[in-house]
Structures are given as C-alpha cells and as structure tokens.
Length: 336
Image 1 (spheres, helix red, strand yellow):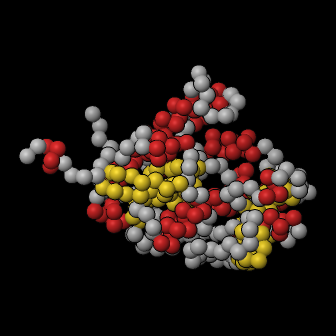
Image 2 (tube, helix red, strand yellow):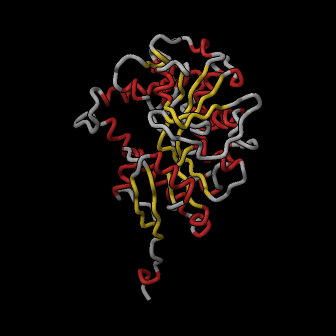
Image 3 (cartoon, helix red, strand yellow):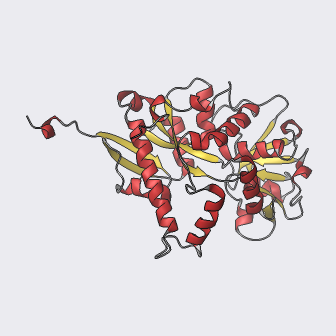
C-alpha cells in the first residue's frame, strides 16, 4: 500500500472571524493550516461573540479577551486560548465627552457618571484601568451606566461580578450617545465611536484632543499595546487533535507576516492610505519590526496588565497568570 493511501484525511474545521487584512491570506486559502480543511465565516465581531459565547456554533473563533479570561477564571475549560491577537487597539481614543466637557482633563471625571456598553467589554477594562492607574480616579467613586452605544436594548452577555462599592445603572431603554447629549452621563468608554462623533457634528468629542500622541507616550512608557481579541479553539476539537493549536498559530503568523509585507510595499501600495509605507517605517521606530506581534513572550507585559485590571474590576473570580491562558502546545517552538 502506498504512502498516499495511508495518509489521513484533513480535519474539517470552521473558523468565524472578522474580516481584516492580517487574516486575509488564511481566509482565502493562500495560507493553509497543515492537516486542516478550513471553512471560514466572516461576521462582525459582535455577532461572532454572541453566537460563540452562547452556542459554540463553530470549532475555532475570534473572541473577546475579556470574556475569555472571565470564563477561564470561573473554571470554564470548554475553550482553549491561542496567543493569536487579530484585534488590538489603544483605547485613550475611545473615551468621549461633550464638546463643553473636560477635554484633555481626565482627572475631572472623578465622581462623574460614565457610560459603558458592558462591564466585560475588553476595551472598557483597559479604559477603566487607565482612569484608575493613570489618572487617579477610583472606580467606586464613579456612577456607572450601562446601555447600547447607538442602539437601545444591549445587556450584559455574561454574569458579571463587581468590585466592592461599584454599582451599575442599567439602561436598556437608552443609548450612550443620547444620554451623553442629554447630559445624563458625563463621558462614555466605548470600543467604537458613538453616532454623534462619527457624523462630525461637533457635539461629542474625544476626551483627548491629540489621542495618538497620548497613546504613543503611554506605549513608550509602559510597553502595553492593548489586546482586544484572541483566537480560541473549542476544547472538544483540541482534545481530539491537539496538534491543531500549533498549526493554527503558525498559519495565523504567516498570514499576518504577509499582511505586514503588503503594508511596507511602496512600489504599488496595497492600502488606500497616503504615505502608508512611510507611516509603517515610522511606527517601526516605536514598536519594532513586528508591528503586530503574536505569541506569549512578546505580549506578556500587555497580558499581565490586562489580567491585573480584570482582577481589580471583578471580571475574574480568581487571579490568573498569563501561562494559565494557553496550552503547553503553543508555549514553546522548535529550534533548528
């Protein structure tokens, strides 16, 4: 019998992920996951998180770092984390106030009413950590309001523990956009801008008038490049085929490296961004050659910072170390 006849068929798996350039070659099939026949579903992240958190509809998924760590701290072993981070973003720029509010004066938000879409949203974990640790605002002195950003009816998708003294006024009938315009809240912490900022009416503005400068200084001082999402495997798929963890890590890494090569290509720019390749070179002076690192060690500082914030804010029921998040199969790589 030939070697080909003995070869096992690939494992059929489905991945749900948001459409972004760093995963484009994996989704298109230009980069393969060894041993896997991969079906890719492209959905908005809100739909991915809701359907996977509630129903586990596919084997491989993009997932909120906040929700994943909250589940892991509660002893949930139904999903396995991979140190692949398709979404990361600095979050000073996601704090919004009215135009007549405390622009460039974050300390003025002490004792304010501040809106959030959910306590467990990863972006707000970082933002609350910034308020407390960078600007000296105790979280228990803030009056917290939970509502959808632009649409009413949003609720917490996970049961949430809160630190001592923290209370949340849930407003499913309202939106943070309208509450801020009406003066019922003084600021909002959100993962994407409210409607009245995006329409350029000038009524709602960013807390920091030069957010990129503030965020760059924060990174240079702390080494924290906030991670929003990671890739997770359903535990039943991992248990049946533990080798898929490293194979997915390698494939995601290759797809991301190809994306960075496109970003740097000045001959025929791949992104509709003036001076894109030149901006990439400028950012390399700050972040290093790998602008978007995967893996554990390159992200340990950021992950440790997030886990500290999440424990303080009640997302975690017990303290977690970075190495508690990922299986042994992706903690080390072979060397030649």
